[in-house]
Length: 132
Image (cartoon, rainbow, N blue to C red; front, side):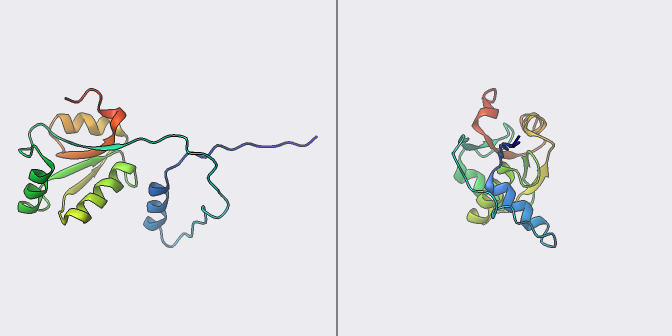
């Protein structure tokens, strides 16, 4: 009797590559044995800003961050998460600096953002259905 194992690997390439960069002394050869078979889902990221942040547009947020570098904070669902990488890319492209506050998941991070403990976040659109 032949036994076969079917493995479903669900991961984002961004966070996987970021983790490889975090531990350069541990070589990870994850791309070689895997080949993509199907695109399972796409989840857009949106930029959400806490209600107490005076910026109401993207341009105002960039101007505020440039005027006060390293004073604004942003939350993410954890180091290497898609929100973390999206914000790092946004900061690099906008030439701004914000302080990263990693959380253990999207829920606690959104609660703190709505409570004003972090200034902004990039998160999946599905996580913001209760944000107004």
